[in-house]
Amino acid sequence: MQGAFYTGKYRNVFAELGYSQDEIDQKLSQTFHEIFYGENRFYSEAGEDMGYFEDTGNHDVRTEGMSYAMMMCVQMDKKEEFDRVWKWARTYMYMEDGYNKGYFAWSCQTDGKKNDTGPAPDGEEFFAMALFFASHRWGDGEGIFCYSQQARKILHDCIHNGEKEPGDPIMEPENYLIRFIPSRTFSDPSYHCAHFYELFALWADEEDRPFWKKAAKASREYLKTACHPDTGLAPEYAYYDGTPYEKEQDIFGGRHDWYFSDSYRVVANLGLDYEWFAADSWNVENNNKVQRFFCEIHKDEDFMTYEIDGRVLDKPALHPVAIIATNAQASLAADGPYAKECVERFWNTPLRTGDRRYYDNCLYLFALLALSGNYRIYQ
Image (cartoon, rainbow, N blue to C red; front, side, top):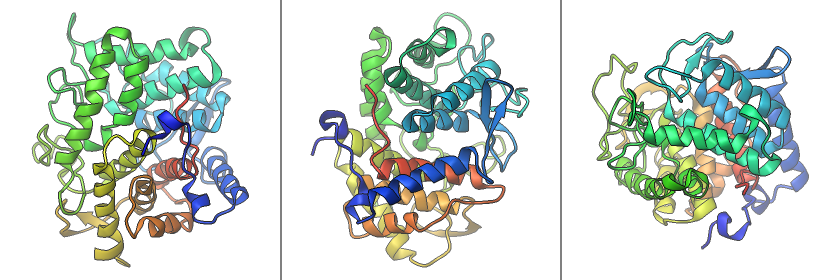
C-alpha cells in the first residue's frame, strides 16, 4: 500500500460505510460552524483582526488549541479565521527574547497576558505544519503572513535553540525525539507526528532536512516502545526508552504514566501517519489492539482511566468523546473487526457540550476531517 502523499488519494471511510456525500459534507460543515460560531463555540474574535480558541475547562488560551484551530482552518479553506488566530498567537504568545526565544508561551489569559513563559512543543509542530499548508494553499503574504518563512523559523529554533545563546531545543539532538518541554529530557508519545516530520524534511531549511527525516524514523520506532505490546495503549509521558514517566508528579499536575487525556491522540496520529505515508504496518497492528481493548474487552463500559497494561482505575475519563473520536480516526490504519464499529459509534456521537467540550471537540473535528478524506497534505 502507498500513502496519500504518493497517490494523492485520501480514503473517505464514511463513504466506504455507506454514508452519502451530502451527509458527510453537511456534518463537517455543521461541526466547524458549531465550534467556531455556534451556541457551544470556543472560538472568539478579538478586535478587528484577531481571534482565539479558549480551553473551556481551564479558561485559558493554549498553543495546543491555537495551532489546532489553524490546522482546522487551513483544511477547511477558512483563511480569515486562520489569519486571525495566527495573528493572536504571534502577538501574544510568541517570545521575542529570553530563554525560550523563538517559542510560544503555552498558556495565556484570554486578554493575551502570559500565564507561563514555557512552550508546549506540540504547539510548535502544529503551528509549523499549518503554516506550510497555508503557504501552499493560499500563497505567502507579507510579514507574519509570509507563512512558509514563519514555519521555517519555528522549525529552525526547535532544533538550534541553545547553540549560540542560553536556551534548549525542542528536538533532542542525540536521538531526534521531541521533548515534553525543552528543559526536560523525556517525551510525550502524543507529540510524535512522524507524518509531519516527513514533510518538514522536504520544506524546512535545507540544512535541517536530514534531521527531520531522522526524526520521522525515530518517532515511529519510539512509539513501538511506548505503546503496550498487548493493549496498544500509550502513557501520557514516557522516557526515551518508552517506559512510562513516573517522576515529579507534583510538578506536572499528578500522574502521567497512565492512559489518560494526552494519550488518546497517539492512535489518531498513527492513523493519519498511515493514511499519508503507510510507512509501517505496525500502525495497523497497534490500532487493532486499541480498538479491541475498547470494543471487546471493555465493551459497553463507561470510559475510565487505565494503566497501559489495561488495568482499570477508579477514575472516570475526563474526555470520553475524545476517546470515541480518536478510536474512530485509528481506523485509518486499523483493519480489524472493530474498525467499522468505532467509526459508526463516532458518527452517532454528538459534539460535547459543557465546560470540558474544548479538547473533545477539537479531536472530534480532526477525526471528522480525517475519516472524510479531508485532512490533506497541501504541497
